[in-house]
Image (tube, rainbow, N blue to C red; front, side, top):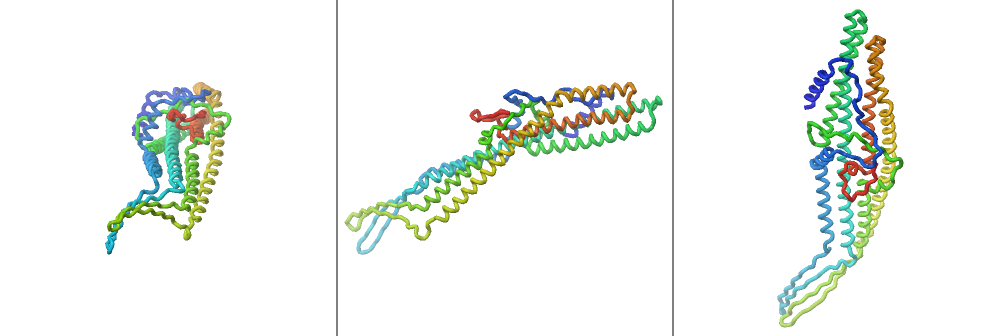
Length: 430
């Protein structure tokens, strides 16, 4: 499928650009603009594509199964801790005795509440892990899309480079036939064209690898991949620290920390005895029997202090893990915003001034070459510089997108940016 598209695109370029002078390697329009709007508009095709990726993802299905399991455990933890017991006693001696009794252990220290709290926190952790998985898959997909479209732009540029060099060879041959150029210029033109063909082959390989990576991430094989938006909202001037509170990864660690604290309370309550009371009724020959019983365990051989200490240490470990993750998330948030700001500034400068100068340079270069004011060597040097500049701009555009995606990931705004966040989700847009 990919080779077929490459062949067709190459044929189209050859048919639509038969004269070398018409093959000016420049952007026909600005492929990305930086907007000052506060709301990002994302095409519905991209939204539907992300939804399809989520639906097809085994990781999403596994995370949802973990949420369902946590919900079931929470339901079980909210039920009474002890079931009543039924006893039957029959004795045949000189005196026949028969009795039946009912006993119930009381949750005197309210272990049920501690277990319920643990299960609730574990369910919240599982839910946060599901959100983290959703965000991770969306980020991976957007990043793969960015790399694919960057590779496609570079491949299209390599096609234009090859066509430009082919037209250059034809012109050199015409001038050689007219006696205006020597053999050295013809050899130089042929070597340059061969280099362009090698670069085109390398670009085709990189495009194929990028598409394969996109297929691996999404699990889909499409003839046409959804486009990224042509407009990107400019980054904010300052970091909003409240964004960290909505990060799913930190929510997971917070829930685990709270669950560990609840386990400390449960371990302490496990060291408190729960009494068992019972009632028994029966007959002894012709006499009626009625009795009460009371039983309480004696924690003389094991007072459960070791379990409390272990749970306390585990809770301290979870708290330190959260603090470490919070510090790293803050640093990543700051760094991602700085990178986003620097790349958008560079891209805005290119769009505002460099892009137009690039077009003018190529047009002027073409006119001077046609007028015979440039040697073949001078033309090739400046044409190569012009094409390399456009390749650098294409690379920069990909870096802008990657920086934007990293910022969205670090600030937990990916789903909001896509327009797929729940209505109650608080957003702090770019």
